[in-house]
Image 1 (cartoon, rainbow, N blue to C red):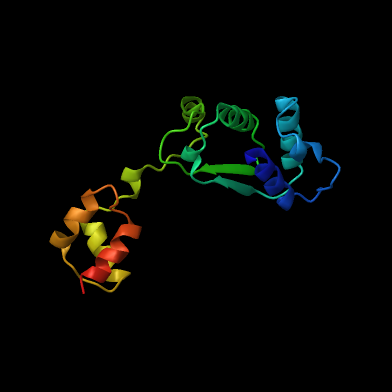
Image 2: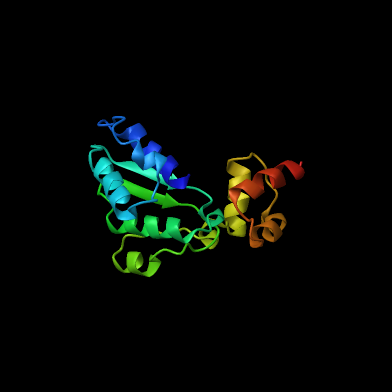
Amino acid sequence: MFHSHRYYTVHSISKTYTNQNPTFVAEPLRRNKKLVLTALLNEISTVSNNFILVLDDYHVIDAQPVDNALTFLLEHLPQQMHLIIATREDPTLPLARLRVRDQLTEVRATDLRFTPSEAAEFLNQVMGRNPGISRTRQPVHRPTGQRAALVPLSLSLC
């Protein structure tokens, strides 16, 4: 199912889409995994514009064949394709190799968390609230000290 969705996503942006490759959807990765993935990569290479494929909640996937297929894709990623993986834990992918090649940008929870002064500035400028830094310290130091958590906080400070 995962690979079928990925296949249709690529076809939605590909200008050379035809219905001549139904086996990729009907038998995803059953017979010859590398052949199917190579065909998918060949299809991706026909896309002339840069594009981004976003895989959200990747931590939910617990299947080594999917990790293996994604690793193969990453090792042969065409230049015009960029991949974003949103996950709550490190995926079973060659992250160290990608870091060494400078092909990986990581944004961790600590990068998203506001400092107390940033939270106060956000609440003051964006939300029109002025709680003061002392009232923003506690929520900011929790794991959810991010923008999404500050909006309900600002509403409760009225």
